[in-house]
Image (cartoon, rainbow, N blue to C red; front, side):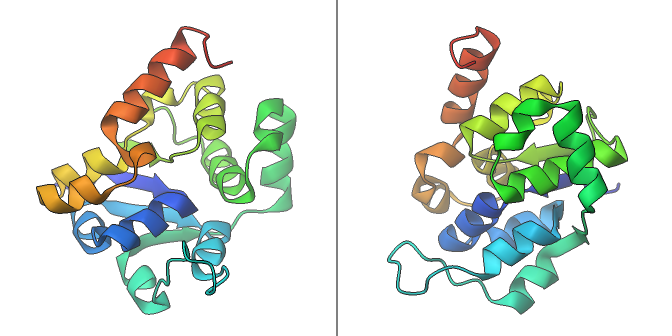
Length: 173
């Protein structure tokens, strides 16, 4: 049986390395992202106490795909869905690639992010039901309770469920 494709943004990749669940999720799922998210994952200020050092070889070994995004794909997304223009670069590039390749919505593909603006954009694109939390992915990959408990709030299933509900009710526009 082929692995479920999961498209991850920068923050989810960083959190999976911070908590030590990267290897488990990348073995269980086909983790894909875009070049911009890889760039963001591998940079940052090492002096920042929140900085997560990601070994490039470990990241590359766990990725099933790293996709380039063209300026045309970015422009097509932003012109076709104006709210996407305010997204962070990583999410904007990820969504532009998905939009250009018409992969969503799909039950065989998941997207993971912990950014409310990105979730609102996903809803506008009709992709909110394709969204999975890092906690859900990690649990399905067999990650233990101690690691799941180490995940920050915005990577948990309860947080995602609450935000999805608020978006659907129009509480979060």
